[in-house]
Image (cartoon, rainbow, N blue to C red; front, side, top):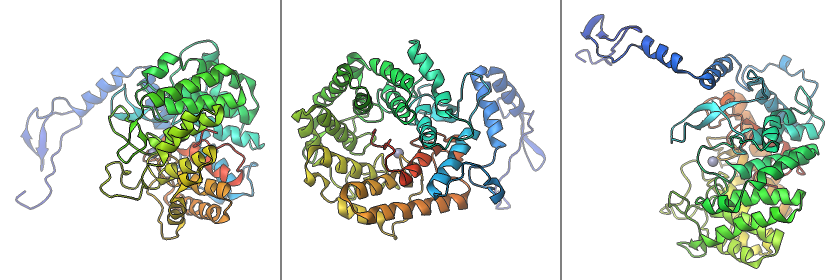
Length: 475
Ligand SMILES: [Zn+2]
């Protein structure tokens, strides 16, 4: 302090005293030495904890997904002339490389998840959910396999889903993803959708039967328990999963279950601040994005109308979306997206714009897309810099879906060109950094769809093949 220097205190790794400049300042300052704390932690590790740590150590020895890739690495026989397909294969190869197969019962990955139901997040083996679990990883491999582009082995998608399919068909429980209650993308609804999509891509009936069995567990009682209502946790996500299954397996009980989700949503609708309908999630907040708010609920209601012709669903979808103010509006609006999230799928314009395009299509109301052209122009402007994040949920790759979809629906090629330009910029930045910007510091720890590598890979494939179903729209 007297030297106007930053004070540096030290302790020996096996000691408890605090020293500075080689002099002991306080004996027994620490309650235990670093060595003792480490040994206690190691002794307390259970089998799962040991496996997690061993896999983390293995991952630190692996190269980043994009860094240090030399031309000599590009010798795979799967190389494709299309840059998006080529990059998706590269991503799939990375996802395959960072998998843990040491347990002997299939393939698993480490990702960032909530710890023991608390708000704390940490590295853990991922669950089966669509959002960040294995049901979101399988579609990337299934899409490649469906085009004859297997990643090192045929039907890796089937192998990775095998333990889930066995558990569901044998009526054993499975870890959907979240430790709390969820029937949406983080719960059974996401599992139903992931199995259905993979089954469609691979033409595999057993996966579809498993999807159907999983759907049966979204009971009327489960739906009534939902107080989140949204796509990620609640009845909107469950309805979208059930409707996707019903389109492939048109059995009346599946549609009845989806309709029950719709009724639950209508029962809990309240009047929004700016008119129309809104939903409070269990944080008592009203939000408007696709992931947790009005845009996602309106989209689910519009799809219910498409499947049932029930005008109550159509009217509620319109009443919800017509009164959602533009994301760019009103600085004082407490529901505006967090900083850097303006163009995101989850909270921002990518999700809201997608909902506007689709709801307008399903309910035949062009006025629902009011203001969208302006939003698309802003998003596509060369001066609009990339978001800090690349991931599908909150970043640049999610906004590609809005531009491409707008091009499909409105028949205007300029939006597809803008998507290509943004994708090119995103890839160039990832190459510079040596990693995509995803929820974890290093993309090796984010293998999943919405916040990780698999989603980026799948969305790049959709730039090449528009007939691949959109996961962000639960097609
Ligand atoms: Zn997000």
